[in-house]
Length: 365
Ligand code: F6R
Image (tube, rainbow, N blue to C red; front, side, top):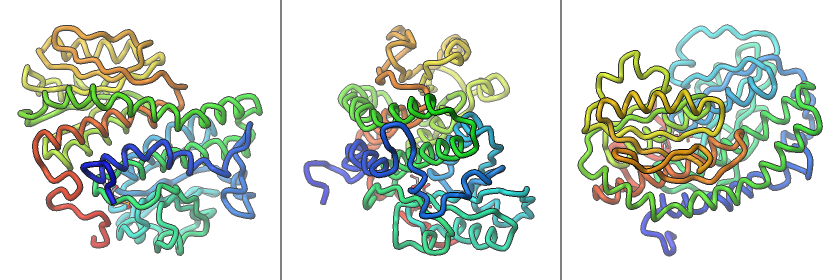
C-alpha cells in the first residue's frame, strides 16, 4: 500500500529514518556496537585479517563505501568486486579473509553463485548483509546481519541501500573494536553519531520541496555527470545509477580527481554536473575540480552542508544538506540524490516504480 505517496519509491525514501532505526535496534548500546548481533559466537571478528566484499548494482556501491570505513577504522585490507566478475575468475584468498556479500533480495543469481564458489575456497567465514530473512543467501551463508528495511517494492533500491550502509558501519566498528584498532572513547563517539542517524536522515528528507524545484532543470537533459571524492565517490556512482535507471538520462560518475584525465572533454553548457560536497580536508580539492567544470560552462548542482561555504551563483544551484559527522556523510548525503532522481523521473513521466527492462530481483545470469 502506497498510502499518501504517489509511488512506492517515494514512500520508501520517506521510510528511511524509521528503517535505519530498526537496523540499529538491539545492535548498539550507549557506547558500543553489540557483537552479539553477529550471532552467539562472534569470536571470528578478531580473527579477520582481510575482507572480500561481493555484490551487484546498488549493493555493490554500498560495499564500495564500506571499504573506506573498514580500512580507515579497522586498518584491514578490503576489496570490493561485482559478483558477475568475481564468480568467473580465479580468486586468491589470503589467510583469515572474511567473505561478505550484500544483497537486498538475497536471491541475486550472481551473488549466490559467488557465495557458493567462496564456500569452496579457504575463507574464514561467510557473512551476508541482507534484507530478506527467508532468502537463499541468508540460508546458505554462515552468518547473517539483517538490514531490517522491510519489503522494498520500488525497483530502484533506496531504503535497502541506506540500511545496508548502516549495517556495514556497525560491522566496521565491531571489527575495528575487536581488532583493538578502536579505543572506547572513539567507539562511543561513533555510536553516538549512529544514534543521531535517523534524525539526520529525516532532516535531509525535509529538503524534498527544494530538490523538486531543481529537478525541473533536468527535464530536457540527455546526460549528467556525478562527481565525488573519497567515500562520496561511490555515492556519486549510486546517484548516477538511480538517475539512469528511473529517468533514462545517461549518467556517469567519476572520482572528481579523474575529471581532467578524460571526462572534462564532455563538459559544455548542456552538461549538468552533480556533486555532494564532503565537509573535510578534500573540500578544497573538490572546489577546484568544480571550478574547472564551471570554466567550461558546465552547470553545477551542489549538495552540501552550510559549512562547506557553497552559495547559489551564476550556473551554480546549491542545495543544503544537514551537517553530520564525517563518517555518516555517505548515508545522509544519499538522500538528496534519491530525491533528485525521483523528481526528475516524475517530471519526465517515466514509470518510477517499474522502470523499463528491469526486474526487482535478478535471479537470472
Ligand atoms: C538498483 C538496484 C539493483 C540491485 C541489484 C542487486 O536500484 O536495485 O542494482 O541493487 O540488482 O540486487 P540485490 O541487492 O537484491 O542483490
